[in-house]
Image 1: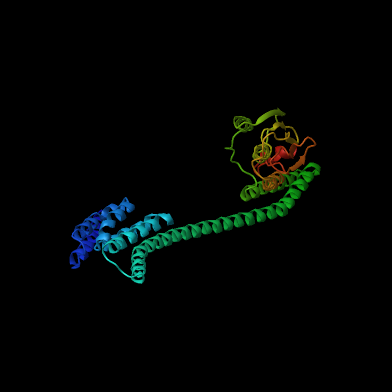
Image 2: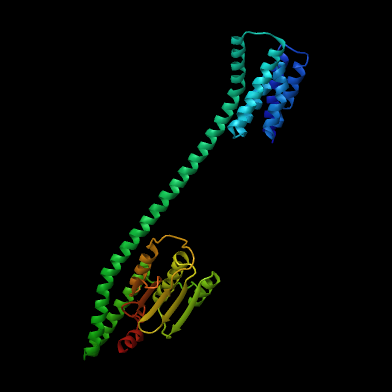
Length: 371
């Protein structure tokens, strides 16, 4: 607070001092109009145009150029309109030339030279103020652009890292998971056909170890999620209805689903409903879920009755197909003859291609093998 007051006192003091030190006073009122304009310079902070207007009598008196330069500079800083800036420059020029024309007779060449000088004297600080403001705006814009670019690059790097991690996870899942599945299946077959109790016990333990390793690997890769804090299917349907989507839900079967399959089923319905709201608003939707073995889910919508809200990128369905595949199922999408669209998925009821309920400890392995 102290610094702005000090700056204003300094500005008023310097301009007033320049006026008082000027010996040439063309008119009796020149001194007082110039000093008044100088003392009222602080009003430029709120009303730049008023400060320039108050300087007009001082400029007409020949002594008001010092405060006028300050007022015009601030006007250039604050005023964005070029015609308005030009108006005040012309007004100051006319105020400086008019008394000369009324009191003296000067040649045309001298008049033009004096006019050009007055115009330049009033226009230079105005242009300087506008240039300072423009430079400040450009600097801010450049900073924002650089920050946005840095954020974009960071997002691209994060996306690239996530994509690479997902690719590595799929490679590990496909390679290691395949062999672990074969080990578990072969062990189960050995346990079922072996006559030696020790061989059966070893085969059961080997099968349980293979399944537990497969389950832990998928959990580590993010392919299985124990987090089930997402909404239920009914809540998802209710939200869609509140949003204006006409949805009919039909559920059959009561098989217990693993977290991975349950999440995949939820995402199928969620993505399909999202696509309906974007690409076929107003369409009637039928959601059918059969929690049997295998689990089947289909989302069928008719043609939209309202203009589409987005273009068809297809990235969501590609990601959904990958999620369903990692859960051990298949996703099918197709256009319908009536102009609608169908999304359906077939999912296994268990945790994975190998049932993950067995434990490596004691009775869990025996009960699975016996089952």
